[in-house]
Image (cartoon, rainbow, N blue to C red; front, side):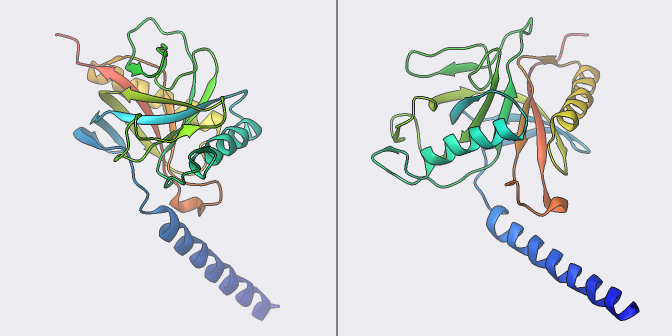
Length: 224
């Protein structure tokens, strides 16, 4: 019996190590949006982002079914569901956002006949977005075949962030968002848009290696 427990334990360690290794090899070097760190305090950061291009699609819900549906739509686009059937590299993070009505200004979005009060593009609903490769702009990206996919350039500017691990379930994201909003208020910054849930790993990544962030655009400190 003791021998069996030992072998099961060793097997679990080997499998866990292999799982961790595969996660690091396949997901540890994905391209991410460029930013300059302005302030850091533990897991909290203030960043100045460069402009980025997002491919986004609406979701019906932030539950797993909605997440999987949104991911499939965007994955089809980057893996050849476009004109001229070009394959684009996967980047990080995958962004999700729930449209909110906030009494504040928002980052500027620009695109073909499109301007909306949302950091991604879906006021009043759930949206998922993939960050496009940094060496591509809206003019050079392939055209989506699906009308569910929109391509937009986003200028976030100043963004407050909070890093957290594990799985980015809705209830966990809500709790971490509240933590970040408390920190923003303590710093004297003003929110400029809805919170985004940034996930840097696929659903099958090793749990202890998972990296998530809450991102909230902010404006300069209020005068004292």
